[in-house]
Length: 224
Image (tube, rainbow, N blue to C red; front, side):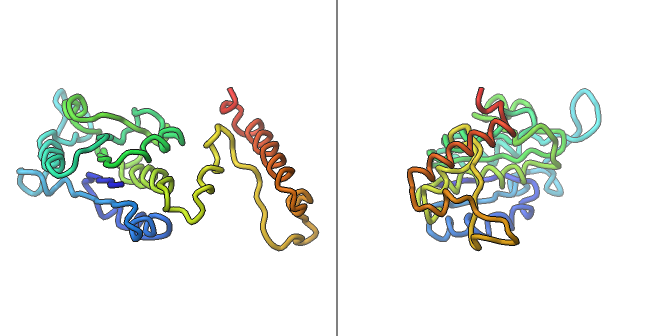
């Protein structure tokens, strides 16, 4: 899979993809992440990519011309399955969306900044708009990192145990059950006997029950 990310401040993304699972995914050749500096595609002086909004008001708006220059240059090389704008007013990102996007070959993520991007670019080039929550960040870079991580770990071969992702929270609209590891007893706190029984059918039943209980207590909306 290939994920290209257009950013005004690409240095913010120098860390998230250089460690842990995302680094291993790239080292294995299963995921390629390219961070593109939007300022490389502007024709304005001092690498300008934003301007005052028509009609007045506070804040600045990302201009359409640099964005179009960038996407048209990139599309000559890569046929994108989705062009995604990261914005607070997009659809809320969830595991179902991550699963769907992980089946794509080429994605382009566009990080918003300032008061947003010129609406004409959204109207004519964006195929999907995503928000990672009901709050506002300084830019879309952190959202891009979150989405790339959520998608990348689902690519077959990225995780050492591919079944691990299938038992994560939200995969079946359930939260994951409690988990334990050694030592079996710590300060008198004991691991549930069923997990030490060796009876895999009983263990699976227990985990399913615990997932239902936890979901009912913490996220009953998922069971609707």
